[in-house]
Image 1 (tube, rainbow, N blue to C red):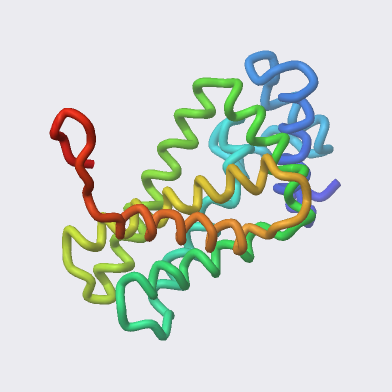
Image 2 (image 1 turned 135 degrees about the horizontal axis):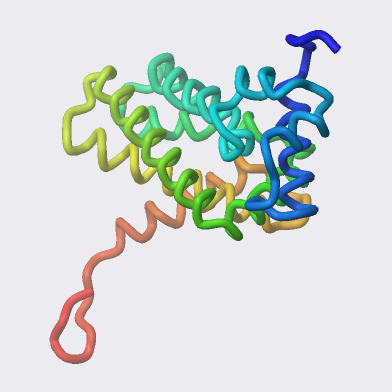
Length: 198
């Protein structure tokens, strides 16, 4: 097999997920992943820095989808910019990716090292969106607040999509999640027993 065979990155990701499912993350080696995918260890390391990254390949492309959407959005208001970014990101997850995303989520949740990497990737994504918003002349702290809120909406919606049976799209779930957030933020504080406001 050619060292740079088309699709080797995708095969490595599929092989890694299969092995993590079958024998556990800790007992799976890079060599086993490479062998399952039909490539060499060297090819693995040309695609991924370590075995954890085999589950996070594509995060740079997702980040580019978010930031490019902000940069190229026709919207002129900050909320419109982030809404366009969410719509663009939804296209990154067609229905046929749901089974793989569900299996991946289960593996990530079961291993603290992977969950920690997931948190880091989401923080980096939020920072990149904030930078893109600043590039559209959105000032601080608005840029950071909107960016982190946008990624929170994405994460909640994506988690719902992974857990649901086929039906609603990521875009539909994101729209509903964003509506809930906007409604919550628009609520007026009210008195509760004890004299506190909420």
